[in-house]
Length: 634
Image 1: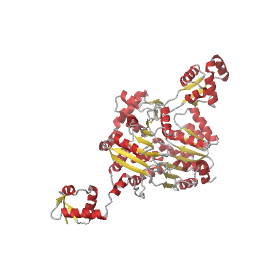
Image 2: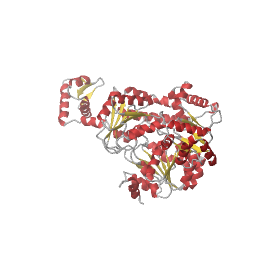
Image 3: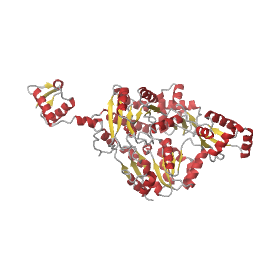
Image 4: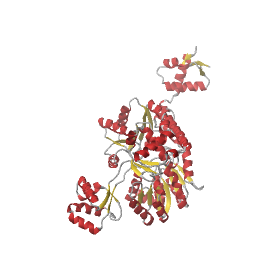
């Protein structure tokens, strides 16, 4: 089939979006390709279509488990066979998945970057007929970017095993420096191609408000803009507080953050997607990979720390092409606090070492051991136990991640697993002796293929519904089967996980790369400056400001952001210009006048319009202003 036939058959579209076809053709020509497409720009189609047009399997590398699961399910819904391997899966399940990828009729294998270097993955890789490597969220490969992940830096080692396979790197937000770094780190060939779609969102109106009362302003926005909404907050506590505020004012709202159980997060997300909940107040843990086209407004209740995050999150509004709004609320204190974030987010080396030692002691890891081990790890409980400031602990752990010493997965879910560990004749005898357990045994055998051969992920609620029993009864009976050595039952986990990538260092050998660390700190300070300028500037089109940050310099003024509307209001007609000019010259005709007095006496004239006329007259050398602020004719 041609790529257009594939698009029509599986997606139901007659034509590609801008640049999609160019990117697909570059990939089909075997070229390494970098694609910058804004949020909602259809990145997945760019690797899914060419992979379907060729024999073999597309290897998709993604850091987001939720996004992987969502895309795999979407492909399956289209009748396209796809697989995924991610952290938390049992060994035997991973092995079976890789066997299917190597020998089955599958078109896509989604993997987290950490899986690429495991011996098990490398064992099956030669048998996989890989036709394309797609690297999603490719900005994560650059430590000069806003979301550096060390595991991404090792993706390039795939070149050793797949030297002739093209790589397609995709991201929604990367500055010119980060773009260069992506291509270098992925060892792109000279015959590479780069595509950057315009960062212009013609239907999205950006606004920034210095709000005396954020609560009142938020209520005003949500009462004026009907439809689905997202409100981003910086802290978990804020998400609940804001949701409670909205509910008190009869606005249907829910809240979402990484501290909720996996089951609760899924339920709240589904309620919002299905429009049972109108407004989702959330941290930035919410939204990645969610394709909800009818979001009418995204409000940032707190100032984000960089334009990259802001652009991605704001871009979740208006994916259906209809008018939508991205609103940022701030106060002056927030901007002052943001300037202080550098020293908080980048602790001194000794502080990092203190936190590292405390973590190792907390987990009871002996020096020279621990590599590859994972632990349940609640950061707040740890910080309280060792009397360490929670922010210091958070950012020290983040630094240890970036230094490839450990990984910390705050949003973690590992489903329950079961494998039968008895012989079938033993099981038959057991059923006869324990008839009350027969229903749950039969339910397991009928619901989960291969459960006698390897540990299989099971979902207790689904099992309870299938056999028409109450969930607590099913859980109790599964425990009985486990204790009777009929099954090996590992109960689900949804606690944050910390994994050691190295053995515990001895106290005198603790080391981090201070040069790279200092550069990352400097880049963070540049990003803070960029978002601060965006918030404070009141003249330039906001859409143009964002686009210029990402090196897209050809975007025209949008005409619908707050700054564009303000400038339209400040347009001066010929009559107004003549009136203001006449007033100025009349007041200074006999002697110089203090500009404050002049402004005070020019009643009915907007200050912004006065300064427009004043600047023109000064540029034309018809008036001047002294150091003392006196205006006089030249």
